[in-house]
Image (cartoon, rainbow, N blue to C red; front, side, top):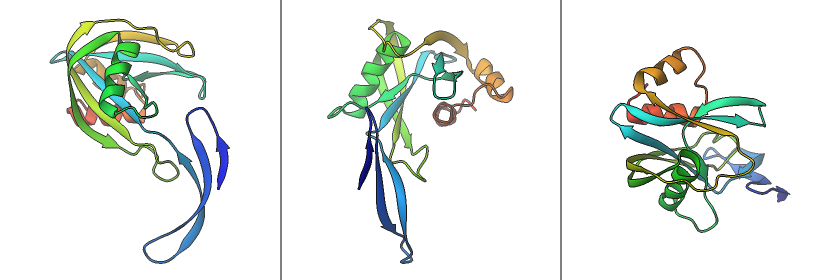
Length: 165
């Protein structure tokens, strides 16, 4: 049963049964899915974002990411988001894998792409986002992680896919 319909998500109350026969009523957040892109400028340099997240009222270091639009493929979304958030068009987008960031209550699946062959291209970003772009090395990423300043789970997963952490 639909409990809430938002701009991106819908929340349902559903009865689900486990393989062992135990059933429970769950609150399920249905999400259209998302992408995250690791934009490689060089072998050892990427574009990282410092983005304000109003829900936690703080800035996070993140890789470019975004939600799939209705009917949009993950590949098309990755191509759009890297332009909007990082200011580059990618000649090549390689799917590295996918993650379910919060499978205990959400259907969200995030597809992780590696972007290569970047050339500058800007598009208007979302007006409800505050984003600062920066170029960082692998060593800088590791330092942010070790200092506890890189805490965005999807970004950490993407760096793990790339062997950067």
